Every structure is written in structure tokens, then in C-alpha cells.
Length: 171
Image: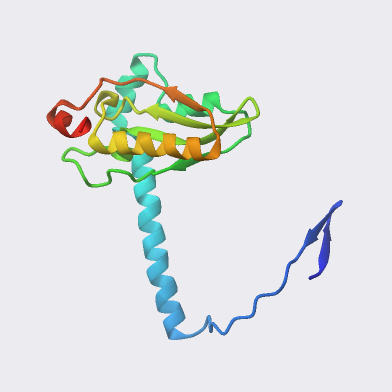
């Protein structure tokens, strides 16, 4: 293991990993192309989810003087810190009429120097109502918080249960 100097910091280069992968082989190129296609599809889906309920719903929400769920989270977390979102693609293509991210944004962010689990209803998605998968995502966020000793912060803007699926929301 060698040490390299970067500015005033010493960085361990770590052991060199040996490989027999031939990055110029036809198999490698085909696999790389297939992986790029999947990554591009994933990025497009994440971008769609981050639009919430769509441009019209976001415009209506903002006309009421409200911030989106992602904007509320960004305002809450410490400046310059990151937000590690969980289950971004929850409920993808599951419900008629769409429920991006299961209608809730959840993840870990730093608030006043403390890692926290943050759960925010996305009111641009069906008024922030709860779908069956919204409840599962919410419970998973609480489970992660409990397992890691994280306090939970809830940013609620919800119309309650999505009535057409209410029987499935509260089993």
C-alpha cells in the first residue's frame, strides 16, 4: 500500500486490484452498453419522480405560496450538506394515474449537525394522500431510523388516505 500526497493530505492509494477483464472485448462492450441503457433509464425515472405530480400540480402548489416537499427538505437541512433519499422509485408504474415516489420523499439529512430521517409528503402527488405503498415507505423510513438511532422529522402536507385505495392503506 502506498501513500500519495494531495495538497496537505496524505491519501492511501490502497492495494491495487488485479483483474482479468478485457475492456476491449466484444462481451465487455456489449455489457457496458446494456448497463448504460439501464442507468440512463434509471436516471430518467428518477428525474420524472423528482417532478412530483407534474408541472401543473407544482404550479398550483406554488400559487398557494407553498414549497414542494424537496424544497422543504432542502430548506431544512444544513447548508452544503447532502440528502440521501431512500426508495425514490417506490410505486413506480403501480397505480393508475401515477404516484411518483409513492407520494412521499424520505431520506437521511443533516439538521443542526445531527443526522436525521426526514419524511415529507409530496402534496403535488394527489394532494399528498397516502397510497398503500406510501405507508410501507413511511414505515421503512422509521425502521431505518430506529436501527440507526436517528431522530425522525416529519414534514406533513397530506389529504389523508387516497380514498379509492383506502381499504389497502390501513390493513
